[in-house]
Image (cartoon, rainbow, N blue to C red; front, side, top):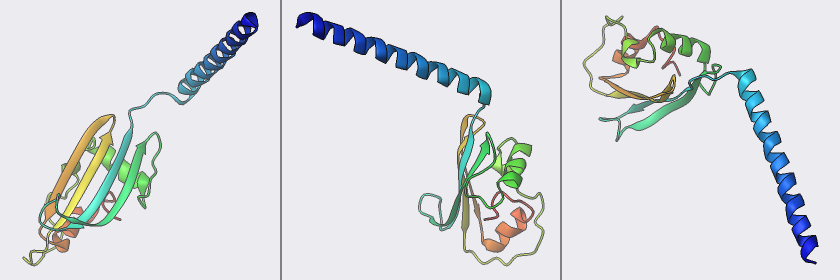
Length: 146
């Protein structure tokens, strides 16, 4: 009896070891064919309120730029191209000069971008005085056009 259970344990260990070797080899082959890349995946939000921590989120989308553009963003290719042009620095997306005149009504709109850009953690927040001011500075950008 003792030899039978010892044989079963040895057989089980051998089969498990072969399975693990096969799994490891498959993982190595998959990594070699797809290549390694630094991930770029973000959550973008637009909300209303005084601060990002207390804002009411009105809209939110996901944006994945690496390995391929995707997510729930309506134009992921264009948004990823814009972010790539500024190396993931959201602050550089705003127009240098506003494109339209806006009233001074204070009804703050808050934009946030959180996630990973090319393997590095990023978190960005901007507050605009009202929706007109937001459109005036981000009018030609696709990143927050959702």
